[in-house]
Length: 432
Image 1: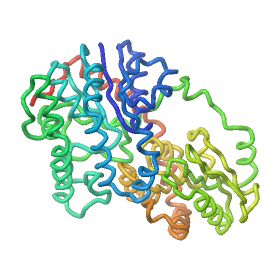
Image 2: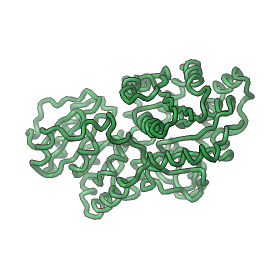
Image 3: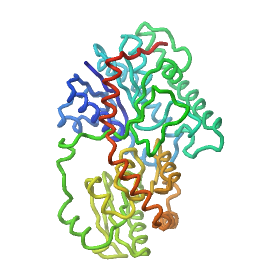
């Protein structure tokens, strides 16, 4: 089978689709992965055919303006900037997505490219599946649409209402550009809601996250599948670093389990203040700490509060190997990092900024294996209080239990089996 995988966004949006592409290739399918141009060098070593969409999402998020609206936790601004990017690059995106999907037997799409994928499914009669790393659809009474509200509302009908509000606003923002393209393709303008049509037409939806985090809602149809997290298969390029650096390992073994401060993916405008805050917290709690800078320009300068025995600065490390050595993990709350954290069996604190991050923060708080602090509310006192709350035997034991169950999941294998079953039975084509 010739299968196109469409995705766009950050690494957390591209990595699961790359994992799926590798799994499908191994089963003998001819796969074409289409995603942002800034991931060409990331995908290339895996020898998966990559169709570049001429959009640089990293440039948007790492710009000074991008860091400011992320730091403010402004979801509306995030959606505005996203739609602005789609509008300004619409002709290029339409060209690239069309080229990636023609002459294929199946399109599997990320939610952000659903409207494009549905249009081409209808035009060329190509079967369609939706694959999502977060629970954005379909609607449910059990939790709200995360871009409208991250905290669960007290009544089911209010949670449902958030999905209607989101669909109305989001589809209105895309309708003009999409109808312009549909007319060029010889299709009639959109009728009704694309989101509603996906559900009515029984388009299968693969949910690439754990049932431990989001139990299957009672009001979802059987065409939804919570598979578990999709990981890059073992013995691949991503797993070449199968050990921690000797210096880090020696430091870990020389004392008590440290707190991990993963500030690298956060929109930090004043890195030194954040480093100093982490060091002060570690000293006040008389514990050790690892401070990870990730892709940011954070550098440890003049550490006035401690010595090198209690603080370890690093650029990056293998999270799967490092996290089990820690006592608490503090991170930004991306879906991939959240799953890796939970699989380690260690309590965590999510300092969220935008998109699905607040939703995951609320989920770990609700099941009492972590805490959520929106980044604009991140202070030394709030972070210290959250750390102290997690130093609790019942929390630690529950995190370990959930981690053990999640680690035994094989989300990628589950997804591959579901796709193959549907290919054998036949998949629906989108209809307007």
